[in-house]
Length: 429
Image (tube, rainbow, N blue to C red; front, side):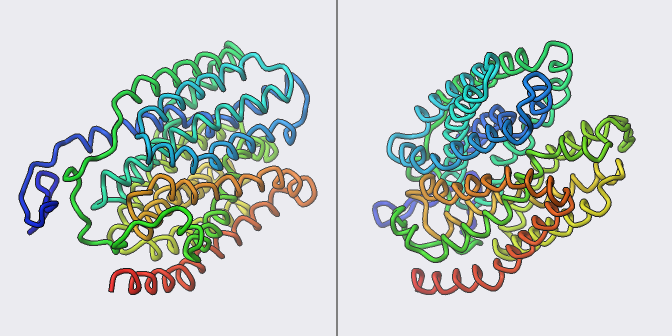
C-alpha cells in the first residue's frame, strides 16, 4: 500500500487499519521553523555588533569574539542534556525556558559594559538557543520519518535563513539608535515569540506518523551510551567538526574580512538591487544558508546521505578556495560568499537525519544533540582564525578551511558509507 500524508498503517494489535493522518505534524513543523527564525540572530547577527562594540570599548576583535565562541559552546554542548529532557518530558517546557533565556541574553548584552558581562550574556543566550534548536530539530525528526532529510532541512533553514530579513533593520537600528538599543528590543521580541509558540509544541503519538519506504533506517532504537560506543558516531563527529569549523569562521569573521579587504561599503549591483558589498553578502548568505538545508536534505532523501555529503562538502571546499583567490573583488565576494554558505548549511540537516536513520527515533533528540556538540568543538577554531589571519593573512585561513572540507567529502565515501552498510546488515538482517 502507498502511504500518503492522509493515511497511515496502525498495527499495535497485530492487525492493521487505516486512519487519517492529522495535519498536526505540518503545524508542528511550522512552529519549529518559526522558533528557529527567532533564535537565528543570536548567531548570524552577531557579526554586525563586533565592530560597534570594539569602537566603543577598544577591547580588540579577538577578545570580543570570545563571546561568540562561548555562545556556540553553550548552544551546542548542552543540547544532549536538553534533548534528554525533551525525550523525557516533551518539547513544550524546554522551549519555553529557552525562549526566556534567549530574551535575557540579548537584554543583558544591551547593558553590558565589560567583557565578563558579554561572556555571561553569551552563555545565557547560548543555553536558550540550544534548547530551542535541539528541540525543534528533534521534533521534526520524530514527526517525519518518511521525509526526515527534508523536514530537518526546513527546520534548520529557519535558523540558517531566519536572520535574512532582519540584517538591514538591525544594521539600520545600530546606526540610528546604537547597538545597545538594538540588542534590547530585538532580544525581547525574539524571546517573546518563542515563549508563546512553545505552548503549542508536542511530540507525535503512536499512529500519527507514516513509516519510511525509501531511506535505509535502523530496526531498533539505540540509547545514548550505545551511540557513543559506535564508530559511526565518531566518524560523523569528525566530519561535522571539519565542515563546521570553516563555516563558523566565515560566519563570525565575514564583516572583519570585508573590512580588511576594503570592500565592505563598496556598492554592488546584482539581481536588480544595489547594496554595499557586506550588506549584500550577508543578506544573500542568510538566504542561501537557509535554502541549502531543505534542498540537500531532500536530495539526501533521494540519493542517500553519504553521496549528498560528498557532493556538498566538495562544493564547499571549492567555494572557499575561490573566495581566497578572488574575494577582493566586491561582486565576486558577494557571489562566492553565497556559494560558501550554500555548501555549508546543509550539515544541519544531513547529520541529524543520518544520526536518526542509524540510531532510531526513541532517543532522536538526545542522540542528534550529542552529534550537534561537534559544532561547539568546531567553534574553538574560530579564535584561531584571528591568529592565522594576523600571521599569514585571510588566505591562510581560507586554505585551511578548504582542506578541511575536502577531507570531510572524502571521509563520507571511504569511511562513513561502508560503515553504515555493515551496520545495516547487522541490525536489519
